[in-house]
Image 1 (cartoon, rainbow, N blue to C red):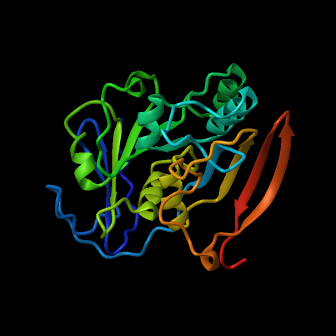
Image 2 (image 1 turned 90 degrees about the vertical axis):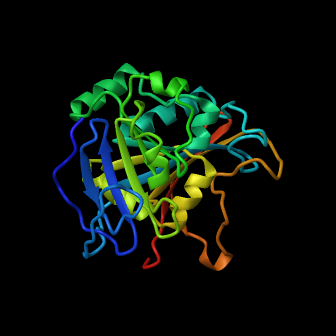
Image 3 (image 1 turned 135 degrees about the vertical axis):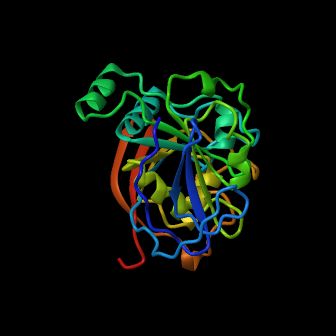
Length: 275
């Protein structure tokens, strides 16, 4: 895989690098990176472009996306699985947290022949890019995920990406580190857009969705409400993390409601502050 020769604008306190397995570098939003062997200082405006980002999750009727043990048991029915595969097929890339990958072990692939034909008719490759988010980069290389016939990227910090620079597994490394040494999602998504990702599906977990919500980079939300109760203070929800005050809560517009047997499929759009 070759890197693009395009350069995007940058922020003033953080940076992102795209690294291919052949170790050629492409710079995105690079600002005085101290930990990598390549250092550069630039001054420019933040890039406004990013993928259209949609969260797709199934949850219990009491708002849990897994049980307290994070068991790899899916709540949804075959109807929900077909819905999930449809959303994955519409995306250029799928983003998931490392914790979700550790639990499930594999990525959600497009297998339905009709969906594969649709992707081909739109000039898309058979499978969307599977992007793992991990600030630490500590992911078991023996997971079945690394044997699946899919393109794989990692978005991480400088330290996390360093763990994968000299080993196979990911076709591309995206370094998007903010001044707090955590992943800067505004920068990460701008880099994805520069690399051709126009539609991004986010499949969890709750910590990742919470981070994206805080960064104000989410556009839509598909929630499947499944007819079961899980309970438990330690069970994850669709949006975990520190949370928002009620006065800062993100407002949603309900676009669609569908009932299929005992499940409800809710489609929301996130409203912006200017609305």
